[in-house]
Amino acid sequence: MATITKKELVARIASQTGETKVVTKDILQRFLDEIINELAKGNRLEFREFGVFEIKGRPARRAQNPRTLEKVDVPAKRVVKFKVGRLMKKRVTDDPSPSPRPPTALS
Image (cartoon, one colour):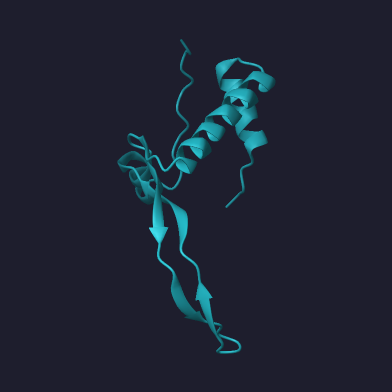
C-alpha cells in the first residue's frame, strides 16, 4: 500500500488533462478549500457515487484515562463524517486493482 500525496495527484491529473501542474494544483486546492469552507458552515456535501461529507455533533462526556484511571471531562465537539458512495464502495471492496479511467476532455 502506498501513500499518495497531493503533489502526485496534481502530476497525474495534469498529465491526463494536458493542463499545467500550476493550474491543476490551483484548481485542486480551490476544490479542497471549498469543501473545508462548506463543512465549516455546517453544510453537507454530496458527491454522487463518491460519498457524502457532513458534520456531526458529539456530546460532552465523562471518560477515563486508561493509564491512570483518572476521570476526565471531554467537551462536546463537531466532527467530520464521511459516508462512502456506491461506486467507491464497489471499487474498494470488489476490485483490488481497478484500471485507471481514460482521460476525458474538459469543457
